[in-house]
Each structure stands twice: as C-alpha cells, then as structure tokens.
Length: 276
Image: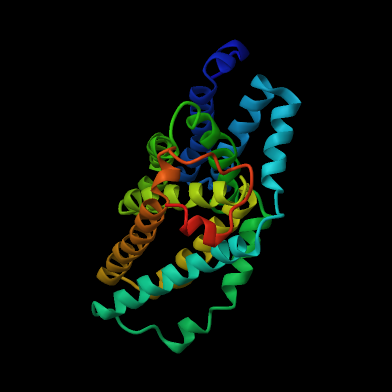
C-alpha cells in the first residue's frame, strides 16, 4: 500500500495511523507463521511518524521530533516519576494479588530483581525491543496532531483507540491480555501527562514505558500463574486506573484546556499537583 505524498499532506494523522498498522502488522503476521521478527512491529509508530513528517514538514519536522526524543534536561522529579512509579504500582498490584490468596513469591523469584535493570537498559537501547520505541510515534507525533483544536482530555480517546487496535496482533498471539485494553486507558493518561509536564520529553515516556515493561512484565507477572495471573492483571489495571484518575482529577483544568498551556516550561511535581 502506497499513500501518495499529496494524500499524506492532506490527511497526515490518518496516514500516520495507516502506515503504523502497515509497518507493525506485517511482522506480526510473520510471527504468527513462526518467522518471529516481532521486534520490528514495535518500531512501526516511529517509522510511520518519520515518513509522515518527512513528507509534511521536511527537515524541520524531523528535527523537532529528534529534539523531543533526546530532551533530557528536565527536573529530577520527573526522572523519579518515570523510574519509580512503575515499580511502586507493580509492587502494590503484586501485594494485592497475594492478599487475594496468591502464593507469596519465593526467595528465588525475588532474587531476580537485579535483572530488571538489565531488561530496562536493553529495551531503552535496542530499537524495536519491547514497547519503548513506540513512543516517538505516539507521544512525539500523534499527541500533537490530536491536540490541534482539542483539549488534552478529548485527545486521549482517539489515541487510546488507535493504540488498542494496534495491539490486536498481540492479543491474537497471547502476548497481551484483554484486560490490558482498560490498562491502556490509564497508560495513555499517565504517559501523556508525563510527556507534557516534562516539557514534551519523549525520552521520559520511553523511560517509564521501558521500566513498566521490565518491572511488571518481566519481574512481577511471572511470579503468578493460572487464576492468580489473571488476578494480578486485574490488580495491575486497578492500581494504574486509580493513579490515572488522581492525575485526571487533580489536574482537571489543565486536561480540559481551561488552564494556560503549560508545555512551554517543564512543571515541577509540586506545581503539577497544585494546578487544580
């Protein structure tokens, strides 16, 4: 499928979505056939953003996206949020699962904790490994397109829908659970919030995405099997949803666009909480 440049210029977001699915789904089909280049699928949103920006904005647009990816000069508190929040939420979800009757993780399982750092770094440094490198497409490009003429709150829902549809091959292969559809709502809220509050830093969202995959997917989730794995998935969704709801309520004026645009200057964590 080839979209002429004139159509891409006329329908940039639609073109981005179609190209994202094209670039992502053909590796997923090969994966279903046992050929397994699944890593390329996670790179699809980024590749689509590069193509659309090259056609619609040229070098200036590509440079803007690159600046967002390498934007590291943000307040230390946002690094703390990006690295610490997934650990805290996964820990609470695991604790709640044990309270519901799951076996307490063994010492051997808990001793695997140092591996989280290795997985985190691999996902950060190797494009296409895990979901980290989706973010230049979702946050670095799609968010800005969807927020044209919309409040930040209104822009959440079409992005969530696009991301859910994008995950269909992962649902089909069992690499994603259906409960994750609800979890993605919370993820879009928290990731968009962190992105804007850190001054449009794609890097910070890549960090939180990578840490979440490492600590939740690779460390806590394997501790539970059978019905307890299902419970752990629901507890994870519950915890993420509660945190996302707090972020929505506390920053309601900012989300609904009744507050002055705050993406020019990174906010401190205190300012973010006090902005309701």
